[in-house]
Image 1 (spheres, rainbow, N blue to C red):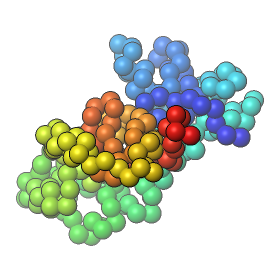
Image 2: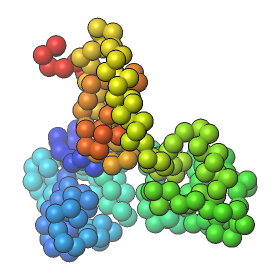
Image 3: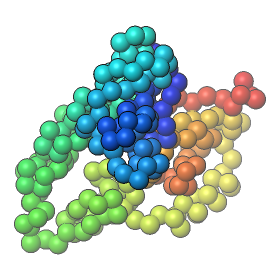
Length: 234
């Protein structure tokens, strides 16, 4: 059965997690941590509440009472419910990562998952004599890898967060978007997007040059659903 409409700015899911620390129900640990004075350990979550029928039950992918699916993807270790993004749980990293799994391998020396293109072609970042660069997201890259990354783009190759301060470029893009009207058939097209920088979801007007996150105003976004016409144009 299809999932009931629910979720938060961070995840697309149709259940609430019961925080093992305080017993309160939140859509996700990030929502919990923003409201409470203590962090929530998602690995210790035992129970969830269905957003459709309100039944409280053991954490699982579908409601045992109304069969509503809580999330297209569910990890029984991290208790992560979300829309399917080809996620997979890496036991060695201890977290879920966006895949597909077959395109990545876990490097035990670097202690992280890397694209298969790096397999056998990179050195341990902790022992290499090549200097390391710390990205704003916290990931480490060899200085040479960082320089190569800048030739191709501005995003961390591991988590897709912006690796540079892009605020000036985003304002330039604001001007370009304003000066570039879309063809008539696309002017009222709305799309759902996911921000790679703040993880917020929003519904915005489609534009070929880019779609701006309504939460942090970044253009580092990806379409996260189908297109639809604005209601007044339907």
